[in-house]
Image (cartoon, rainbow, N blue to C red; front, top):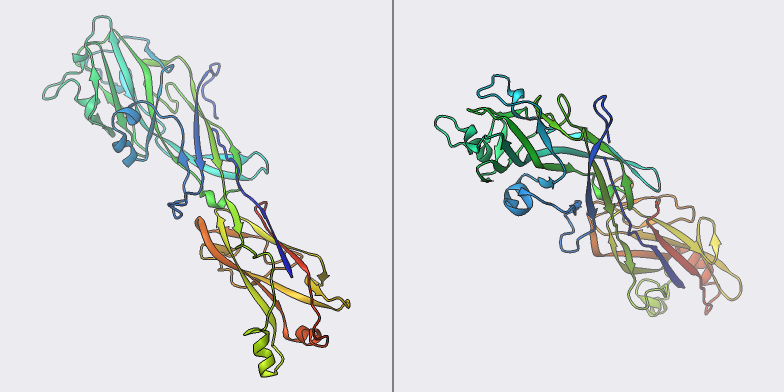
Length: 414
C-alpha cells in the first residue's frame, strides 16, 4: 500500500487598525501606525504572544527601556503633535484646568478587527499608558516657575504628580524640559501649578505610551485583521489637556497591522510513504503458529509542527463506504481503516486528546484540530489496519497482494 501525504502550510499575515471621532469642529487627525506579528518560536514553544514590531521612540526606547518593559508599555514620540496656550497661565491658579493639566484615556478600550479574507472578527484592547514629551515656556518665563517650598522646580516632572508616576528622568534648559510619566489604569487627571505666571507655553513634541492586549494567536486564522479606533483630543475629549493648552489637531488615530504567520508542517521518515501491513509478530510468527492473524496493521510515525487550526481529510484510489480500500489482482477488495494519533498540545474541537481517531472520507470527526501551544517537531502516528473479518476474506486467496493508495491531507484552511 502506498501512502501519500498532503499538507497545506499555514503561513500568513494578520493586521489591525483603530477610528472614532470627537468634536463638532472639522476633523483633523494625527495618525500612528502600529505593527505586531505572531510567528511560532521553536526556542519558546510555550510562549504564544504577539511581538510588537512598531518602531519605538522617545523615553522608553532611548532612556528607561527596562522600566517601560516592566509596565509592558511602549512609547512613541510624535514630532508633529503640538499644543499651544491660548491665554497666560496664572500663578497659583485654583482651577487645575487653567494650566498644565493632563488627562489621557488610560482605561482599556475594545477594538474589533476583521480578517480581510474571511470576515472573521477578533477583539484587541488598547489603553494609553504614558504621557510626556517637551514643554517650553515663553514671554520671559523660566523653568523655575514650577518651584514650590520644599521641592526642586523639576520634581513634579521627574518623579510624577497625582496619579502619574515619573520615571526619574528629565533634561532641561532655562526655558524647556523633557519628561515622561507612566499612567496607571483608570487614572484621573494630573496637573502642575506654577508659582509664577507663564505668558506663553507650548508642548512639542508629545510622547505617549501605550499598552496592548491582543487575542490568543493560536485561536486566530493566519492572515490579516484590520480595524480602526481614534481618540479625540481637546477639552472634554479622550486626551484632555485642560482649557488653556489647545491642540492643532483634534484626533489621534492608531492604525494597527497585526500579522499572524502560523506554521503547519508534517514530515514522514524516508520511505514512510510506502506502508506494508503485517500481522502481530510478522508473517513468520503466523505461519509457525498456524493460526489466522486477528488483523493486519501498521503504525506509521510522522513529525508535526503546528501553531494553529487544521483539519484532516482522506482521498482514496479505491473507495469502500466511508473509507479507503485495497484490491488484489483478481479484483477482490477489502476496506482499510485509517486513524490518527496526535502529540500532546494538539486537541480536537472539544479540547480532548487525539488518540487513534478514525479518519473518514466525509471528514466527520476530523473537521478541526487546534493547538494548545506551539507544537514543534513532535511525533504522531497514522494507524492503518484491515480488521479480522476482512483478513479472513484476504486469506481465501493465499499468495495474493492487495494494494491501494491513500492520501492523508493536513489542511490549515479550516
